[in-house]
Length: 193
Image (cartoon, rainbow, N blue to C red; front, side, top):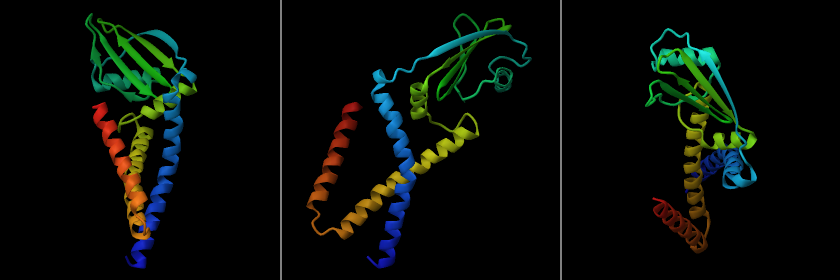
């Protein structure tokens, strides 16, 4: 390997590691809260309000949902609306620390809005599970950085293996560690399927 290639791979490895650092720390903290959930109860606090429905749009259309969000200050990632068995519609929005449910009655004359707010442990739980390119600009940026972190993770691992292979004379310990990691991951993934 020529010196230019070596320096390029080292720099790539370093940059990928720096990109990963903040995401790994965030996932460690939020994942730790999830794993030890009995130590960090989410403590939901529900608040339900009823409002007369004055929106002119047909229920369950995109424009109706946008007007509902604007009229009641609802934000977050919108889930698909669900028709209710007894008539009416249920709408849900999710964001870290808060879930919102809006139920429109069968006559489309009233909406019942229930906001469930969580303490910091609930916020960490929601942040850890946040995914998808929907919900507004902040969610798009979050998802784009998650994609960037995923690419950085692959680059970090691949460049690390490459640098280790090119610079280490005794490869047996590294081969054993790499093999053990591959076997462990394969066993866990196949067991969970």
